[in-house]
Each structure stands twice: as structure tokens, then as C-alpha cells.
Length: 280
Image 1 (cartoon, rainbow, N blue to C red):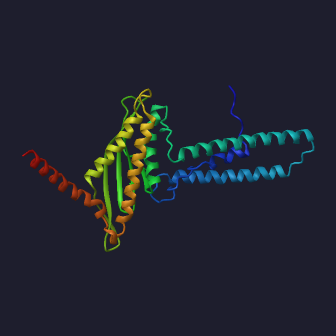
Image 2 (cartoon, rainbow, N blue to C red):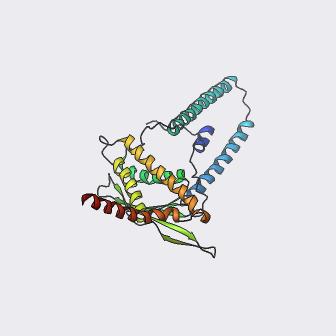
Image 3 (spheres, rainbow, N blue to C red):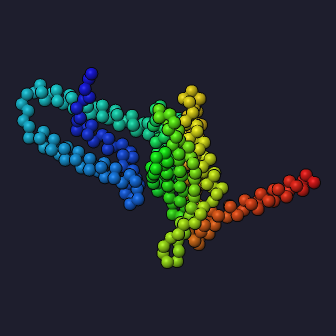
């Protein structure tokens, strides 16, 4: 069995050149990924020290064999070409993924065991992309919670993980609960219950995505999964827009969220009366 090639100066720093190595919200005091981000930073410091030591060693080495120097230059050129090719491939893939108007479907993991964590990570990515703080809590066995927080709006998404078949665990959305952080006159904040209809709407949207990506590979529709994911992102972006308006009391405050719940029963009653009048 062939052993993996030894690390080089380029391969040491290559992993730090990828986007998202350190999450953007890792510096938040309540971020669950803060410890992992610190490990990445410490690893980067250690690698920088190794690079400095290696370069100093090379600078003091006297090479008098022309053939050896030529081989080293050739090896360095080949290694650099491979490195640039790898970076170019990653940049092209990233550009294709982010190109507007194009959908290549969701990259659903082929390993069924990995789908659970992947679904959680997708929700975290949507929340971050929409401009919300995301926090993950593994909690007790079989339950995972993800909190999406804005200036006023807080969304708690609770997942249930079913491991009847350990080789094919299933994830479902057990509940979604919204709440509003209200600033008081004393400068503190208190939470009030959110919208029941919004809770059910978001739960249904996320659950549809989870159902689609957990279908058998021969019936799974990756483009449909991507469409459902895009809808969730758009919904979160719209809520973030309302959240920014609700944060300004002079613009109506929480009325941006609670007026809809007040209006729905009125419209429902009106529609019922209209139907009865037509049927009479």
C-alpha cells in the first residue's frame, strides 16, 4: 500500500486558503464553534513558525551540485503548478455555485450517516447567509437544536434524530418556535412569544427539505431539494428584513410581525361570511 506523500510548504498552508475555514460568527461570545476556531488559529500559528524555520534552514544550506539544484527547481515548479491547478479548480467550482440563475442541485452526501449533520449545517449556512447569528446545541441524545437570532426575532428549531437503523439515521423537525426580544425602558430585554402560524410555516418548509434529501437515491430530486433550500433562504432573508424594521420603534416595532396574526382571523371570518352569503 502506497503511503501518502509527505507534506510540503505549500500543502501546509493550502487548507487555510479555502473559504469558511474559520466561521464568520466564531468570534461571538456565545458561538459554539469558538473553541474550534481557536484550534484553527493555533494551528495556523504553528504552521507559520514551521514555515519560518524551514525557510531559514533552506537559506543557510549551501548547494553546490548543479544537478541537485536543477532537480529541486523542477520539483518545486511541478508542485507549484499542481497547487495553482487545485486552487483554480476550487475557484471555478465556487464561481459556478454562486452564479445567479443557475442551479446544480444540492450536494447531498452519499453516506446516509452524514446526512443528519449535513442538514443541520445547511440550516446554519442559510441563517448566516441571511444575516442571522446561528448557534447549535446538541442537547440530549437524539435531539439537536439550532437557534437563529436577529436583532429582535429569535427562531428555535428543534430536530429529532431517529437511529432505529444506525446505518441510516433519520432527522425530522420536531418543532419551530419564534420569539421576540423586546427592549425595556431600563435597558434590559425580555422575550415574548412569537407567531404560531409562522412557527408552523417555517417547520413545514424545513421539514419538506429534510424529507426530500432523505429519500432513496434513485428517487431523490436534487434540483427540487435545491429549490426548497432556496425558498428557506428567501424566507429567512425576508424575516431579517422585517427584523431590521422591528428593531426601530419609530417604524412600528413588533407590529411588523404581530399584525399578520391579528389580520388572519379577521380575513378568515370575512371569507367564511362571504361563503355563507353566496351559498344562501
